[in-house]
Length: 354
Image 1: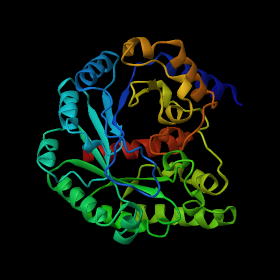
Image 2: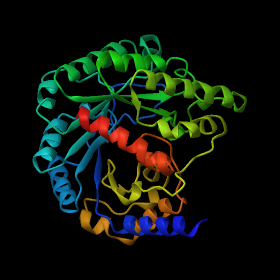
Image 3: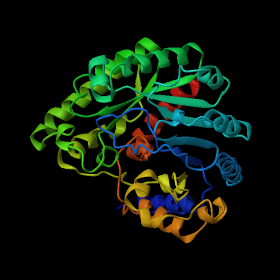
């Protein structure tokens, strides 16, 4: 390895170990109103972190430097006080609130009207294909509700995006997601592969993944989708991860950015029981490595303790469990000159959209 590259990597790793918290993610609820075929979300009707503690956690995160907030869980809008929580987050200075939703509950009551008041909100709606594909995966009538929610969000000037799962059922219909984005005026979309951990380890993975002999065909189809999106002026946020998708979905080869993953150095996740982790994959497969529980420790203690440092180093040294989703270190897959070009393009489009 050239000396200057090694020196740059050491400097970036040292900076990562010393940086402030950037993003606070809190799993506020594990319940979901749908039963999607590629998801094993626990049907738990209980809230996780109580409202008052949630507010104090956000206060602590802001003190640590966090300016991004990601309320998550099952279907986040099944929690009745979630908009109040997001409103508080914006009030105390979070610069971006990112939410992923299936969109089916957004048009109920006054939700859209309340969300319209949040200037920092970025809401991503899951749409995996045209009506027949999406409804087969997620339930009858879900597609129409999701698209209607997207239209209403855009009509009210709320920043919205589309997220799709790459799998056997969707691969030949993802160009239609690009067409939907064009129709709705959504300039940035995300595509990420089917994930066994999310689906549940007892799911029939073969029904969603691909055989090794299909790797070349899958690679061609993904490149065609990216070219099609570019021709329509639609930015695929996860575009630079696509070359790793075929071996991941055919041979289970888990990728990691060449310079290591920086997510643990900037994110703190609070799960439904209050345990904390520096990324979603570590939370799923390394339960014994909690950095501490928010009911017993302050976020300052958690962020600056030895367990967080250990897990951050695992990511930086490419020794972590590895994952592959839109919450991965997407920038890390952009290499060399291409990294700056693609990253600047995506940020310019997103910032203009916001």
